[in-house]
Length: 441
Image (tube, rainbow, N blue to C red; front, side, top):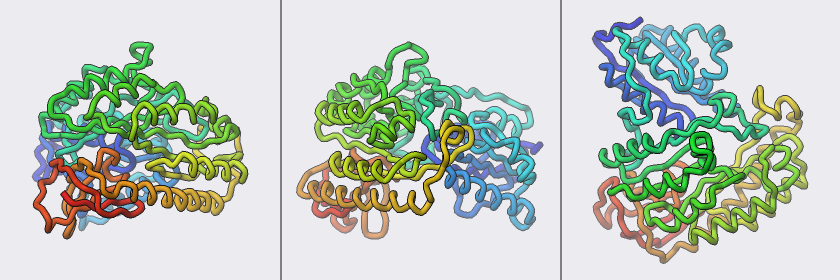
């Protein structure tokens, strides 16, 4: 076990995967810094004697990236020129495959589960102090100081055919509302203007602790926090969606007209095979209701292609549906055959990878056309933007319709006006591309 008083008590921490993993890393960093360590997040040149890798294990590509990163650091540990003494792994991959990985990669000193913050701190702390794992523990924010992610629940009960998340994180567990609001207040006091609310399944928030949907009430209360300019919602589920939330979104100007809701497919055949517990008619009616209740809303969704049983007819119908729905933001990914899932047990992954990738390309090409049209419709409009950073001759910002790092950006010539990072400005859109806007302040 390392002594806390080593000369160089720095730790390099790498985060792979989604923003939910990032929140876990930030919480761990807060605990480690409280215990006397200096943490560096995603360093370009790792130099610390201790490294912690927070892994992702959602789909094949994510698992490969996690394994590749672990192996890279294993080589650094063997090569004494790099001074890496201890290597620890946590997160989804470790949670799911710990027993197998322990034998395959012995260079890793210890494997921890996704939520075993105490175990890691205990391993690295001489006196074995046990900092609280409350959700309101002081986090070390790794994002720019003007925005942050806020996780409101863990796990998922939906059991979609293809998804390994319930196998990794367990059943849906809502974080108590008072803890979430306390953390939101704390973030705003730190200077955060924009909170991106995240969960594997926003729609189920509250059902396990109050037997009713609490998301509308939570967002309504959060919207009343002084200084909180934007609240953005990520990863709603269409089945049993809390429609009262739409009234809250329409009511509060600081609740962004943005909803990330994964729809996955459109034909009844595929929705049934995917175990989505919703029909095409119900899904379409929900989208229509969302758009009519919150005019101007930006819907972001993800679709899956190549799931076992998807016929060419299903795919052609999916393309027609995408063309008709004209989603403002859309991502597509291929089916990954994950051990332990319903699809792995009961279906055969018999669609060739080339066909899967071809379907992705076709859908994204179609979405590029749609996005190009929608973005050009923004020319001449005045929109509030937040400035994230400066790159070369441009300030890079976002509208309320764009989540950090995954959505469109707004470029403003830095020669026209000096801006402050993290501040909001009224901008007039002057030019558009398929996935970016240009503006003057």
